[in-house]
Each structure stands twice: as structure tokens, then as C-alpha cells.
Length: 84
Image (cartoon, rainbow, N blue to C red; front, side, top):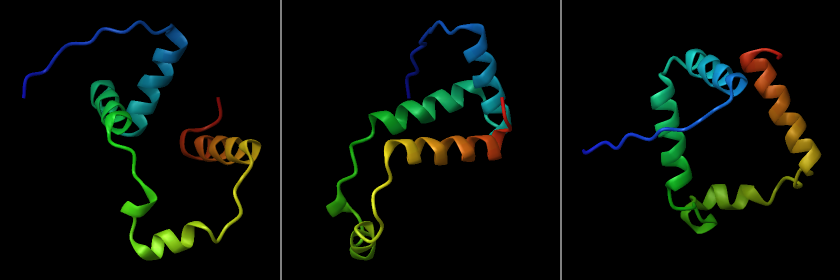
């Protein structure tokens, strides 16, 4: 596979966070960015692509508000990577 070099500019604070995250996941920054781009570039998963049991389970729980989602994600980030 032919690889292309991409250069991006990040502020020092963001770069430090990226390095800490990569270290915590035991991957290089390059591997982490490649994984992120693969996920973003992947075709969107449709509900009909899921197994029937998963499709049925999706409607069982009430939807979370944006605030609830943010709170859950922040709590999990702190649990996994420590408070900043």
C-alpha cells in the first residue's frame, strides 16, 4: 500500500493530550490518527445492517439528552485517562 504523508498543525496543549492518549492506548500517534480516519471514512452503519436482536434492543431504552451524553462521556474519559 502506498502511504501519503500528511502534515497538520496542532497547538501545544492539544498535542500533549494526543500524546498522552496514544501512550495510554499503547499506540503511536500515527496509528491512532490512522484508526480515527478509517472510522470517519467508513460507510455509515445502517440500522438494517445490524442483527435482528440488536435492532429490537435499540428501541428499548429512552434516548439520552445531549447533556446526559456529554456527562456520561466526560465521566468515562475521567475514569479511563484521569482528570485534567
